[in-house]
Image 1 (cartoon, rainbow, N blue to C red):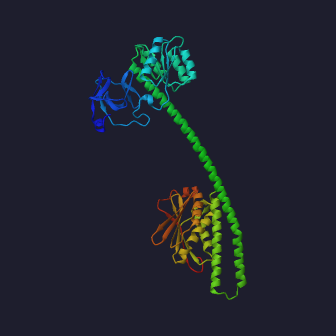
Image 2 (tube, one colour):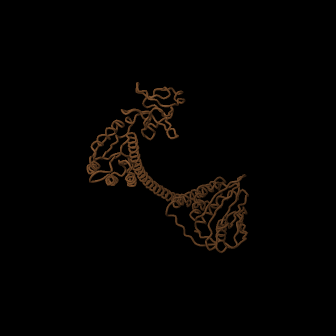
Image 3 (cartoon, rainbow, N blue to C red):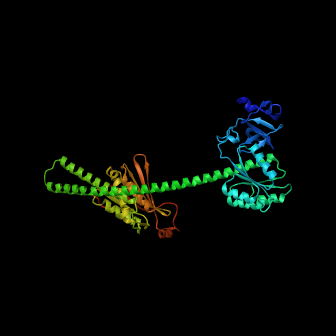
Length: 485
């Protein structure tokens, strides 16, 4: 074998040494399996050298055999075949043995063609049939990789046999043999679905090359069919797996919801009992001189109970909002009036003071008032720490295009936790959107966007502009009396 340097540099013409029965490239003796390229019709065609009883030939990457002869321009190359075809004679490749059927009523040709195939393609099994009827019987018993048939035969000609072959084995290429000059028959054969045609007298190199192409075409077709079947099976397997995982996930969600509901219900009773006992103790101890530690402890216990009660409520809401049990009861309302009423109720009897500026008319939306009340209550509860630090909270209601945008701005507030998750889900169920933006110095802005009712938008469409239109502004501060401005 040539070393790597010579492999990359050797270019010349092929020469056949009859005395030694070997093929030479620029004085170098080629061996079977060696990689070379030959120059044919202006292009370099790669392949590996092979030899059989008829002589030397090049097996191309698509497994077509090209006869090598003296005077052919060639060069060595260092390409590599894929693992399936790397430097192996065709007969040694790990492929099923191709089956060929030859149909001809001429005994001489029926004897000569199988012999030619056996010499050039020893790995191919060849069957013969003296008539089209015999060929049809063989087609019922075996699947062939290529069929060669004469066109002119008694009783049933090759064209009729071709139509029968396409019915029984449509993936099998058929090569028809025509007489010299019978171009009309050749065109008719190709239109009828023939893979190729060979003219008499048959030139063996062309015949073997056409047969190799037909075999490869058939094998590729079957590989594609097998891959399609495997892909379909894999797809069905994935579909079953997805269905199974979906059912398991649904079952897991159901179990989770049951557990959350059960735990929440079980927690309600001891929490209610603790609240009752705490209130009872306070009533019993009223008028007594309690130490500051006891008073502070009572306050801590009550706050802990309230927080635990809120957590239980959040657990139940989280469970219901992710299931079909969460139902919105929408009704049309003025969002500005609704927000004002809710903010009044949330700040009354507290140390928070509410200031209001009404700047524009009504802003109609279709919402579930109870759920929007829960959202606003969650937002106000999350901003109480900011208000107690003497940072006022500003709530602005605006119209921008087809949306109503409620913006809450505060500073130094704590995280909303699970409450924000529930509030965001409620807003999303209203086809809205909710988000938080954080700024330096612990400032933040919460945006709640809700779509306007269709009638409301049509009425304002003529006068609407891309500039936000403010409808109301509320300011919540620590006032001590809780009176409304």
